[in-house]
Image (tube, rainbow, N blue to C red):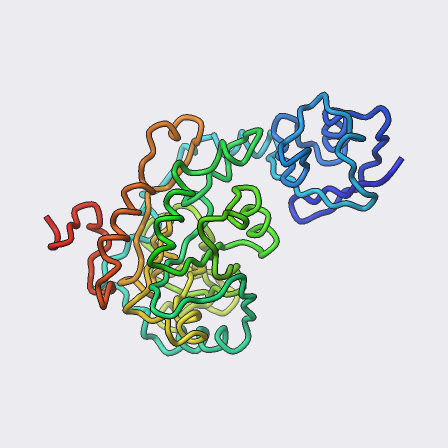
Amino acid sequence: MKSITVKWNGKEYDIEVDDSVMTVRDFKDAIEKQTCVRPHRQKLLNLKLKGKTPDDDTKMGAISLRPGTKIMMMGSLEASVEEAQRIPDDLPPVINDLDIEEEEVAIENRSEYLQKVEKRVKEYEVKILNDMRPGKKLLVLDIDYTLFDHRSTAETGAELMRPFLHEFLTSAYKNYDIVIWSATSMKWIEEKMKLLGVSTHPDYKITFYLDSLAMITIETQKYGVIEAGSVTKVRGCCSSCRFSPRSFCSHHSAAQVKPLGVIWGKYKHYTQQNTIMFDDLRRNFLMNPQNGLKIRAFRQAHQNRATDRELLRLASYLEDIAQMSDISTLNHSKWEHYRKDGYN
């Protein structure tokens, strides 16, 4: 018998494993007893046999896990799945993903946010994975729903990977240094990049990863309900609202965003003129609206992967604009209509 640690939902669970008789299914059953996550919803990210996800009838002894090995698990409780699928009866009007007109909120130059960016520049430690290449532009990519459907269940990461991901990254790497920036922990970023085969692909290299600690919080006007993501009501957000510091203001909301100034402040050869960011949430580039391109979210991978061609088309767009001296002058919201001689 040996103890294997399963990490899920911010907690760790020690599972006793008998290599001689226990199968992967038995292991999943033991996980269910401690977490209540059913086996068919468990995604054990780094449980591998010869580089592949083992079948349920595989003996645990064949996987040769060392005592104390940590297995990362993704999976939802049945109650959470049912709640996510339930449509509330009393939904107020919805404004999706902070789609705010430019004249309504101009936040990128507000001093309090620039101070936060400056603090991240000074304090956030970037671990460089591969050499930066002077003269190359910069492509900053989100993960969840941009490159990977992280909510669906599957036997392998390839089933949840956005179609043509490796072809897209190979094409982009010719003209752009590539950075991954996800609103999650560094551990999860590393695991997902391994799962998708991005971190070890021979045809391109990722320059570095940024996690949630490099993000900042901003406040913006709230109209109706803001759909999805890390958005919360703000306590005592402004004196004009006449709310006490302990009360909730209904006029404003707070959101975590990805300010590109953190990268530009650390590495001077990356600038507003040569950087583009892809994210499925527009609010993530509210600090740098001229540099953001809102990609269509990749969800329900099993249903949509046969028809999704977003990355192929975006690879062509990146190639078309690669020789421009200032890509921040482009309207990236019209990228599908762009040609080398301008927009149609």
